[in-house]
Length: 319
Image 1 (cartoon, helix red, strand yellow):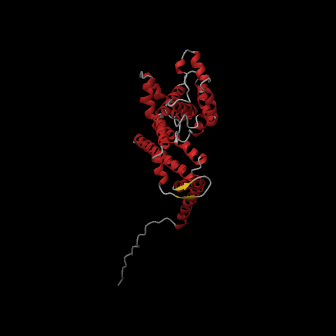
Image 2: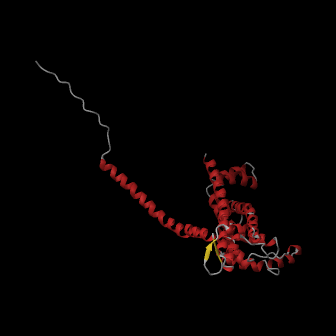
Image 3: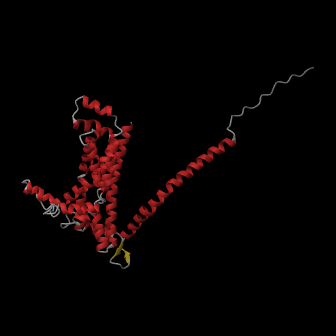
């Protein structure tokens, strides 16, 4: 009698990658992580050392009462409540709001000039260089230069009188209202070249065929600007808007120092210059730090709103 035995099937085992093949992949990811950490660490260390630590120290100092070179004592929120009753502080932040109100000019004027240069207007190479030159001049030098130009007997008023425009020959830096806007105009002259270069970099990403098609369709300059260029340059416009919104209140110190020193009266007093006067001239470190923290919060809120708008516009365009 023969006994037949059926073959026994072996259990199916799922294919698994060999262990030695997994180790190099894990090691490669680990090396990438350490490489990324090594590249980020210097910037992070600089940010902590020169941004977060001074900011934390400023917050602590703003809660102290100090005078001169002596010691300090804890004052709580007294410095902040003192700001609410200080007319100079209120005037400085009111002037800051007036400066912020001029931001549309900071955003639109460089864009118009960049489009003109991009369209190869006559002499565009010359003007591309000329517009950027003011940005390469130190702000303190710009302030000293324009203090002479805008003087009552300076070249600007002499030119206006020579062409019969005597009523426009003002005391530009001594007027209650003209001083602040003269300061803003000088700052715009000094910085808008950077905006022109920023927009030119963005315009280089727009195909020439798009602008040529708009031109052949009969669209005039301003129609092409606002209907074609601006929609396609939303990220660039948003970036420059954020840069101006956050920087316009912290770029003007050297110009104020060289041009008006906050005068006449408090007509050109801005918070950043008031921080300098309070801390280093009147030696009230606690109060000066409180004004500086208030300025930081003001600029941070303005920047957050601008960045949020930029992110919203960017995601809308990507969709």
